[in-house]
Amino acid sequence: MKNNQMYLTNNHFETPKSLELNVFDHQLFRKNAEIVISKLEKYLADSSIRGLALTNPHVLLQAAKDLMTEEHEGIASLDEEKLEAIIDLYIKTGIQVYSPGYMGRQFSGVIPLAGVIDLISSIVNQPSSFYEAGQLPNVVEHIMSNEFNRFIGWERERFAMVTTSGGSLATLTALLAARNDKFPRIWSEGISALERQSRPAIAVGDAHYSVCRAAGILGIGEDQIVRLPLNREKQICIQKVRATLEAAEERGLKVFCLVGSAGTTSVGAFDPIDELAVIAEEKNIWLHIDGAHGASLLVSDKLRHKLKGIEKADSFCWDAHKMMFVPAMCTLLFYKNKEKSYGAFRQEASYVFEKKPNIYTEFDSAEKNFECTKRPLIMNLWVLWALYGKAVFATKIEYLCQLTEHAYQILKDEPDFETLHQPEANIFCFRYLPSNLCERKFPHFQVEIRNRIREGGKFFISKVDIDGVEALRVVFMNHQIETEHFRMLLLEIRKIGQELLNESNKTQVYGFFTKITTEP
Ligand SMILES: *Cc1c(COP(=O)(O)O)cnc(C)c1O
Image (tube, rainbow, N blue to C red; front, side):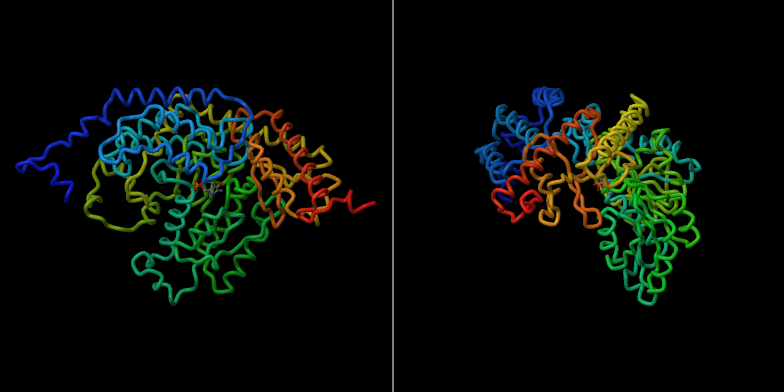
């Protein structure tokens, strides 16, 4: 109220004087962008081996506060030095995803052009759920769905693809479509519609935690998650699926959806989609494949066979912000049957949804999407695909998978390391087990190594718990990594591991002993 009155003179609005110092100015934009771009160019040129410089959050909090203007009344004039300091701080405190030392997570360095296109999306600011607000993105989604369908093989007009902000949201959306398909009354009546029916349940393998969250959100309940037994490769053990589903039925569960993975998060395992599809069809269960990590292998002629049977899945998701090297987020959610893609969000909102479709609204995606205002997620990916073609992705993915296989071959011959699986893609888990380690007395040895490595700031790797066994995990997302870097990592692991053992010998702070000290 008070503010409004400030600008009202004789009942006329006046532009506030302070806005004349124009923060929207195009030349100022250019100047700022040049600062950013030259910083990013240096950042991209740095090929040194480094991981993460983990800062004390309280120190960082203060550093960030110190960069804030003290001007509170008017609009402060731009302090370029502070802008530069903010960019430096942002870059410096991040995980160094372009460095060969980065082997830790599933997001990657991006093909820089994708980032530049992302800048356009940010400046032109066209939310893309409706054709009228995002014309090119909506047309491009259509093009890309057909491009990718070349690797799937569905009938052209029968399937659907939508983009979502992340794999977690894609899986939630697909499970919602599945739930509404099998229990059509829940959408309007809620879970009270279920009283006299048996309990809806979901069967999963080594599922990402987002699947269990989805079960919680959808009113299925985590207790209604049926765990399918896994084989040694951590794939769903196909021989045990029928019996497990039937046992669940006997307990009064109605399994309506089966979630398999194409590339599990923990070890990158691919479930046997083809065989799962046979069982799902036989039992009238929706088959969803979580391909957040591994669906990118579809673009490679050499690796596509890992997803054999994907055309039989009712739905699957694919994170392009993982192995397609575009900025987060960009997830593709596919449905075998276009009609079912409308089933996730059965809802009418007359102010946005047209009753009668026309040539424009046919390209809207809002009815199939949770998001209302949505980033034009597809643009970064499309531009790379349009200008470079598929080979840029296929080559890089094949390289990363070969590199991982090579790392496995190296470790197989190292007596002080244990491999936990033969990698199927670009994720590999192993343990450092030197002969002087007494595991019983140093139970968290692998985690300690991982944390020390992170503190060292040279390499960034992750840890994983496989059936209660803690292990080290590398994810090769970065084509700058060569076998040599993996060998250097091994040296680092040995060095740190031995340091840990020596320290525990000397100080016994942790109460750990090694065989050397316990054996005379
Ligand atoms: C990364 C990942 C997810 C989560 O995807 P977001 O895009 O991070 O939401 C789900 N499933 C698997 C297998 C993943 O690897």
